[in-house]
Length: 110
Image 1: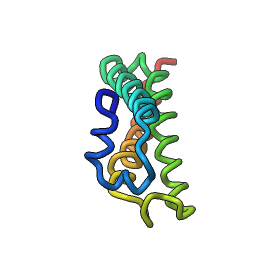
Image 2: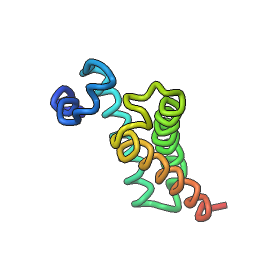
Image 3: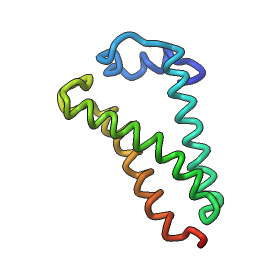
Image 4: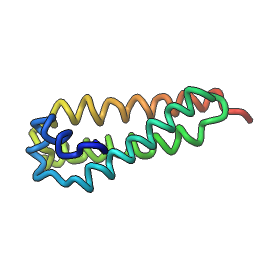
């Protein structure tokens, strides 16, 4: 997404349903995903001391997923019922990240 935003956009044909590619916006979203990956990596490396990083990661990942679910529910998603990219690339990762964040609170230091 960050190195070749237009190539990334072209590689996922259903993205054309959302409108024209915007390289700057694609890089912005790529940056958010990179920051989220760093938060997940930190949480995996130091599980008991990284709840904050995981929480911040979850805000983006789950928030992004909720946005896609709202689009689907309102009928303004790229396709009726959403696309495989919505479900596998956004909603599933957001749900898993939120679940991991909730689960990690069991191990939080008092």
